[in-house]
Amino acid sequence: MNQLLRHLRVGTGAIRFGLTYLLYFSFWQFGCAQVEPATTSAAALTDPSCRTITIQRVTTPINTPAPTPQGLPIPSFNQQSGSAAYGSTLKLSASNMPSGAYTEYSYDNGTTWTKGDQVPVVTKKPMLARTRINDLTSQTAQATVTPYFQRMMVIGNSIMSHGPAPNLGWNNFNGMAASALDKDYTHLLQAKLNGLRDNVQLRMVSGGAFERQFGQAGYSVTEFLTPLQEFKPDIVFVRIGENMDEGAVQQNNLAGNLRVLFDFLRQNAGGPVQIICSTSVWNRPQADAVIRQVAAEKGVPLAELKSMVGVPSYFASQYANAGVAAHPNDAGMQRIADIIWDTMP
Image (cartoon, rainbow, N blue to C red; front, side, top):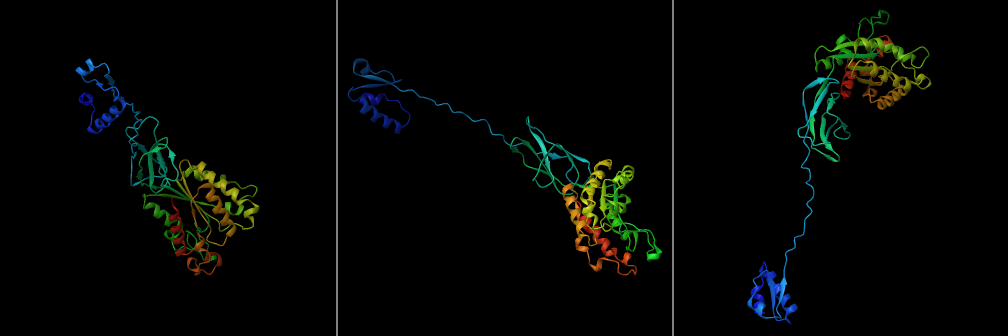
């Protein structure tokens, strides 16, 4: 057994100890064992009962997994702040994009994503972008670029503008009951837009025929075609409702006619256009309900003016004529402009 111990060649002391006992109990009856590849001993050569044991190292192949992607490149906007014309596009780019990867962007803080590398400037809210391949996405990039407007159209009624009517005690040529041109909501909004970009052009278009005749034979929204084609607005405020007959809302299908109007404005503006509408400053619950419904359906931002209805401080009680007095005063005009402005996406 001493010869066996002298010829064992195993790595560590613990393994050597274990093998010694294993060999002892396995081969004690033979009296001798030779472990290769040790040099053959004299005892092994002379003792016919000595057996040779061969020990081989077996290496188990390891299946190395494919390398995990170390992350996609983060895209960058060619403009991250400041302002840009409404509807213009920001360019997304990313270096070292792997095959099959693409960029996508979001206007709603990552709730929904749109594939593409051209991002239209249509909101003042932060825009996000990332790269994607299958379910793997990169970290997000962000840009906050405020859209500015150059051609503002208002479709309105006498609250938008009314010429002098001495018989009514009204002698100005601006939004009825406002004390001056720069005090009506239209020109207040124009001033706000000028704060983003100077020299915003304004065109006012009467919406009175739509208010009174929607759904009637002979009326068509094509009345707005010429102003749209000539002016090519990039923002349209649809500020009507006070002159609508509540009884005609369902009978003449106000909802269907509003859908047609919004679609017509978008299709004929000559380029990207932001449409914003509002409810009435008078008590028109049925008309207002339809305006809210269609605005939501069509993705048109809605300025909710319900808080003004019936509030005396917003109306021109200083006028003796009830029709003029029912119009917003300077405070009411300011309130309309502020609510519409806060609605801007």
